[in-house]
Length: 427
Ligand SMILES: *Cc1c(COP(=O)(O)O)cnc(C)c1O
Image (tube, rainbow, N blue to C red; front, side, top):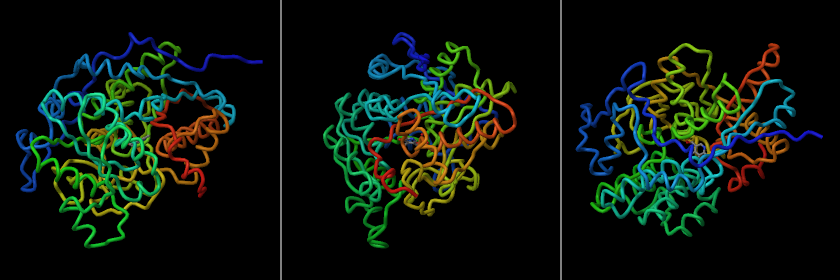
């Protein structure tokens, strides 16, 4: 019989009290966001859709941002999250490497998105905003925001990518239960939506188009702001509680990480895990950070580093990032959260400067290792998280083949219990 510790918990008192801002630590400063005239966007231009505190965080050069008390209290509902040693997965793979996953699936929404949803709802509430609009792909972000809006007393309208709404009807039920309105995108409610429907009534919708709809509505109403669940600098800032907790937990386990791996859709769970390690990555210590993405939507590995818009209609500023182009129509892969043409400017900058790596994985490998995690650890990962898992397993096997081993940490960004259709239709 073998009974061994597999979960590393932190006491509530160890929740990080600050967010870590990587902007001043980037090897090169980020290029400014540009307007349609290709001139830098003024902070006042952003004020139509964002509260002042979030705009300040977006461009901040301050290394540390204290987490406001009401946000800490909200985070403490589920944080700190456990770091889990996946011993049975190691055994199933037959590797000597130590594999850990940071379990962000224990949040109220079942994913890491609640970390920023709570913060953004709070800053909008104290700015006097009463209504939020947003887009959602697979529905995790909409769910996280609906719960956060409930917590801070705000109304929400969610534009959900049509194909995801069909594939994942249950997240709409949760959002509605929390009091949010949910519409399939493209919708008839906005000009961007009506134009897309006129062009192709059968369109599956994209995240870029849903963003256009949500932004269009927020710009047109003073009581309404827009919130984004990924990509932007302030979102990554809010997610740094993940990496800061991992640092404490690995120290408790007497480990130093050799590999940090997270999936990449817009960059927030990757940025949350990895940016607190940027000082270490810059110091030249032995550490490899890998962003895992789908081979069918290979933004970081096949996209171009360029100035591009975050949405289809071009409402958002142009941002310096890796992009497949705003017209890129990703196939209807199950990992809806990874169907995005662009990437976070922070992650793009880290990749361009060579501090991190990116790796694309096939859908076959993603589901192969998702099933292995289910069989070995009895955990069903979100299809997005399964990309990080697959890259982790492939790396552990590669090390084994070379007669080596290491400490690999990946983010389980969410659970797959509302994505079961993906497991019911094997590739
Ligand atoms: C949204 C989402 C992602 C992708 O978004 P990032 O901003 O790249 O983290 C990954 N995993 C889950 C579970 C998600 O909900």
